[in-house]
Amino acid sequence: MFELLHQKITETVSISDEDFEFCKTLFQPKKLRKKRFILGEGDVCKYTIFLEKGLLRSFIVDEKGAEHVLQFSLEGWWCADLYSFFTGEPSNYNIEALEDCELLLITKPSWDLLLERVPALERYFRILIQNNLIVTQRRLMGSFSETAEEKYNNLIYAFPDILQRVPQHMIASYIGISRETLSRIRGQMAIRR
Amino acid sequence: MAVKQTIAFIGAADELCTVLVKKLAEANYPLLFISNDGYRYQQLTDQIKSDIPNADIETTDCVKEGCWEADIIALFDNTTLEKELIERIKVVATQKIVICISTSGIANSASMETRDLQQMLPNSKVIQLFYDPARLQLLVAGANQEAINLVSIIFENAGFKISEKVF
Image (cartoon, rainbow over all chains, first blue to last red; front, side):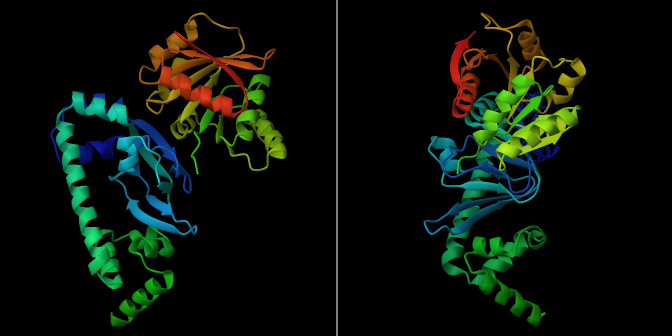
């Protein structure tokens, strides 16, 4: 249940068995069925989520009712609306399971306690947030400068099995293009091969 | 779209269970029935769904899987708190609210069973829920104010009158 969390933490920092046992007492294990939600728009994001198994998508719904996918989260990833998590304000996000998931949830007070009691995890989360900032910055820049095909290729390079796990319309939404444009891009790429 | 907590019920599907789960189902809480007595819970599920077709109810006979999926775990006071059962749910009940539900009267302090349960589940938030059928009122009691607040909100949303007590 905690194997992947332990692996991901120890890839970055050293942590004693005793500290990891303490860490486990602060996480809430949660199984989430496919198509169920862990966060809905208007809720406060009470948890930051570690994904032991499965696939989540974070999306918002605009005033016309259209969904816009912000992020896919895979095994070994963290997922949350950090604005809502840190401020306690209502979230604009929805986080939905695209597959049956096994999650580990931690609340803000537990997270604060964890960082206080296990200083190594301060470094772990600093590096995590640092990497998240870099990826977010690059994605923002890419949204202005990359072509649709480049965005698609970057996504496939980063997540090779995503086409098998995520419906095409959600991939199109994540890239910021229509389903039809994505089909055209994939068709053109297939011809070139 | 607010996401509601999934509540798992462990124990026999008696009259108290029926009263509580019907009102929670009406308030659109996802419910999970965990029992070896699949027949009784299936009857209860069918009864609720005939009145509330969109009721979100699942049943399972695996206590670990059910408690893993649940956000809140509710035990009826007719449930035998076997050590083996508690050991099975301990790892998946971490940081979750565990409710002991009873009709056996208002307590001035935590019952022995609740204290024992809190010791067996040190990383869970164990609270008591007493149902007074004469007054249609619930008393939510325990040592964890946050858990008391959350459970009170849930059962108020379901239409119950609530009073609270902190030990």
